Length: 462
Image (cartoon, rainbow, N blue to C red; front, top):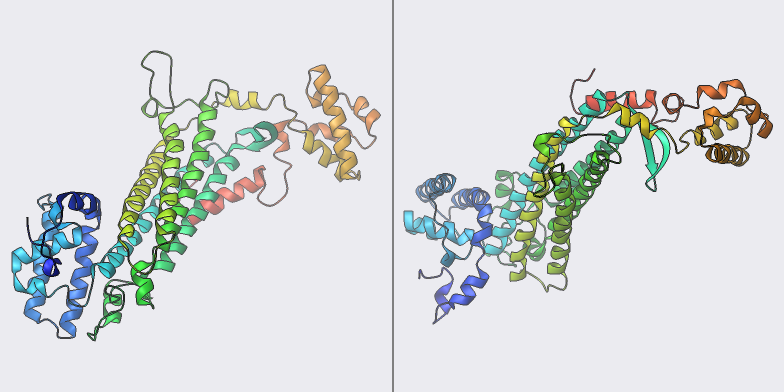
């Protein structure tokens, strides 16, 4: 087995079981390219302060770029005896260029090295996620606009409540996703500080130029406490929290589609390419994608809980427990990314059943609130209007009819504020035209929202 880069003070080699238990190269190889990028910036700084020569720097940079090519082409060997990707790359570089490679680790530790690599990786992951979420928003806005005339029953407590435009329902998820983007962007701003130069925990006696490396790697500033720099994983928790909320929103969206695709709702039929069948029931059309989104939500929540547990009670500064942070973050990011990608491709296939949408509007007395607000406009106090509307609902319920089927004479017998114009509001399709409040589910406001989102997302809608 190759000699460890840290083995100078030990007489015996590491036990094979400890090596197997403690290795991280099987998963932290995800950091390979950012590790190389960070090492090149560090080497460039060492050249600037004359710790290494220009010749050494050129040799180091060329060697690291060669390793990057090997990794990209699948020719790099990830060896368990190297423990992690950082030592794996350094060992490979040493075998390639010899003495200059031994100078690369001057004025840094694996502690600040991995902290830097992980921030670089997370920064790129957030940029990719934000772009993916925006694509999902675009898909939702396009479907909402395509179906902007459809009126459906809006629900509270899973009971039919008021008539709303379908587009308003879909745009609600666009709003959620916008907050998700904002949280990710805020998280990125908070952690975009350079840890490199903190070394193991105390900094270095060598007069390094951290500001130079900061600029090279595109950080907004320096971590200002060396001990915090190597031990801070707040951003991992913050990211996992943001990812958990994204999954909460996509899970809610999935549940809505599952309900709409059921025989009971029949509001949509899942496209063949997004359905699966049953091994025993030939008629089945199962929403597996959407069910898996619900299931994978728990997986991302688990990553958040795991990260909080890893950090709880850790003494200062770096502890090997922190090796486990990457497993959680890598998996959570991949889960969210694949979820968003799949839902973005799935959403344009949604086709709505107009007859079922109309059927949803029958029963449930969706216009009852509109009726009460009509009486308020006529001068009746809201509580009295609420009681009158409720009394008419009871009559219609007893008769098995709709509110519009009650005659004006009967309505006036209960409340003299009624006039013939009430019937202009007692159909769900008419009710949505009377919503006046800003951001409401009515025709005018939904049209404004579609226009607003099309401009924000730079998409063309008619």
